[in-house]
Image (cartoon, rainbow, N blue to C red; front, side, top):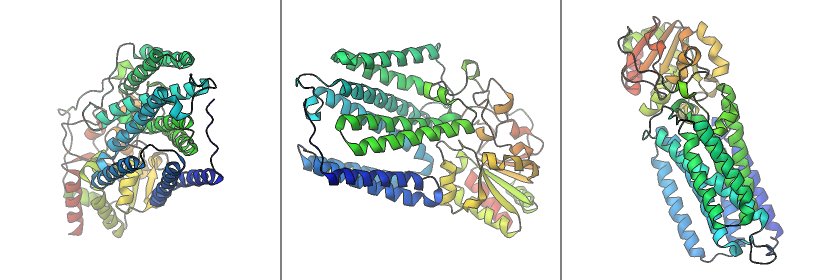
Length: 472
């Protein structure tokens, strides 16, 4: 057996410090107030892990590795500087796909050159049984993460529709494919190239199949789930590479992503098992949702109407959504809130667990605009207040306020808790036009209610006009 040389004590200590920094990073990222500090901890931990790995491992060409790191670093820096917050969900999905692909490539490299990875048995001719299991799991999870993240990216980027795509007999196909992958991983002790290729191909296929039937309204949970998958793929490859830092990091990312997915599923009244199995979203019968019903009567308001109504209110609850993110209206929205507070109006912000297209999307945007954290409330903390609220100001949020989630069993968002904005005395709904529907492709009955006034136009321009009206 090819033994891996025992690492010096300082290496274990360095990886331990790196792991502690990653834990502190997760802790920091749990709140917008400490998120920047959390990012710094994560960056420091990764720097320690990378430098330790480079120093303690035999590398064929250190200059090539450093050049690759430099190229990747420049691409990452430029992308981070240029990326709009509205495109952040797509970026996260793309990152997940790269992590999955990296796991697949490492597994392929280890299979093709096991001696370099120290995974040969005592005879020096065959791969260790435990290493085959690690390799099989790593390549399977990595391939699922890659292909699933590609579909998530296409949906989030608008290249695919937000409605669920229901394949005939999808549950049987998915379960059968997953079962085949498990069996093939178990048979991988036979160590034949055909088995390895079959695991890779089927895993790529099941990644597509798991994400295609998931609707746009549920995409934030998908992003969280794929984040978890990418972590477990990295952890599996950490065992193959005998790298403690990768194991720790992958386990942290995998477990935190799984916990976040579970919390979001509970908040949305969904089944966590269904998420993992790719059954998240509506049943086959619920793949519809209806088109916008422009022929129904609705009331149109102006910026002056909105300014007057909110200026006379005792409490205004602002409900931000993806439309706010698209128009980058968070800064002028905070300005509007400040003006209302100066007039003695109580202002609160209501955040749905899946508002936007990734977990915490709205929280990040509001934090960017310096909205006080004590004015931002989650769904379960504020939903009961809408009945005592004078004005619910909904800016670019459709699916998360749609009563169809409670009343229409054929709707793709049925069963998802919503913000009960309809219970407010007046609903001001900022929307680009009456011709479109939400990301899930479902019309919203709130648009046509007697207590709703539609404010049509670009969200940022509309709020700017409201602010001007308030200032006069």
